[in-house]
Image 1 (tube, rainbow, N blue to C red):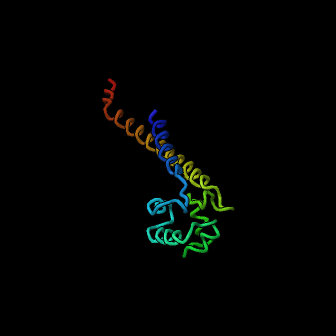
Image 2: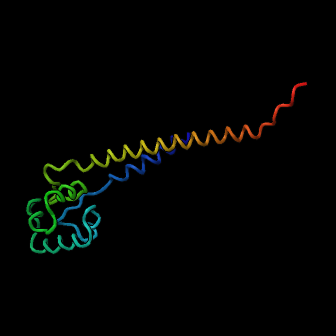
Image 3: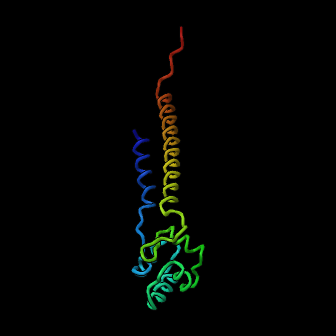
Length: 140
């Protein structure tokens, strides 16, 4: 029973990792941009400065206008949930695929940890039970 509860909690925590919202580069404020993995305060400021000149038309325009955003970083940002005009980068792997695999791995790890803890608790209980049982009297 304990294992099932622990597994359920671990699975719930692991699935929270990929429950993220997409952030549109043309609509987001600095805080929303900062929430995207890979974008910090400096990069979000650069994005907002370039956006003042006009909205980004597509990913190519975004990469061209924002210093420090190249092909590789664009792929990573798209995977992290950044979109341009509501569209993820073409050819970028699905954003939910990596976190889902991570969630499965985390759930497996949590289950293994729960099994180990349960085995340790059982061994400790057996040891305590053996210690509390009085020794048999010697035979006459």
